[in-house]
Image (cartoon, rainbow, N blue to C red; front, top):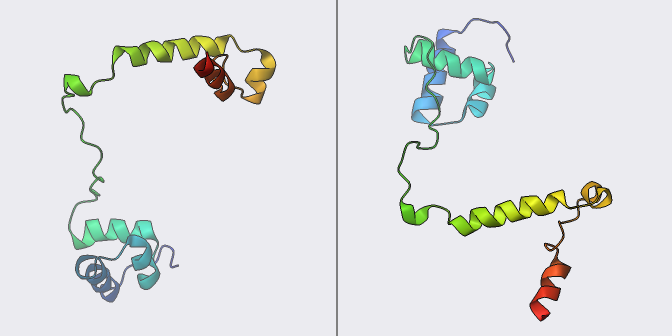
Length: 116
């Protein structure tokens, strides 16, 4: 890879063609053009698109939407979580180190409780 080498006009044209026309990834474009991925992305947004150094952020999750009351977690789920966390505090040192489930939450305990 070229490091610190200026961009030639042919490389800029190839960068524009590979990104806009062919829709290739930055990894592929960097191998074809001979510059790093970061250099290709920054040069594209600054010199080709004229973005004054601002690289557009990748879209994230949509925040701020209202959760309908029917899709909120039920209170019994919060209660169960509190019981499970309290059960973790009752484990002995060996169970904690070995990663055993808390008392009453192992498969054996659930199988025994189902029989009674």
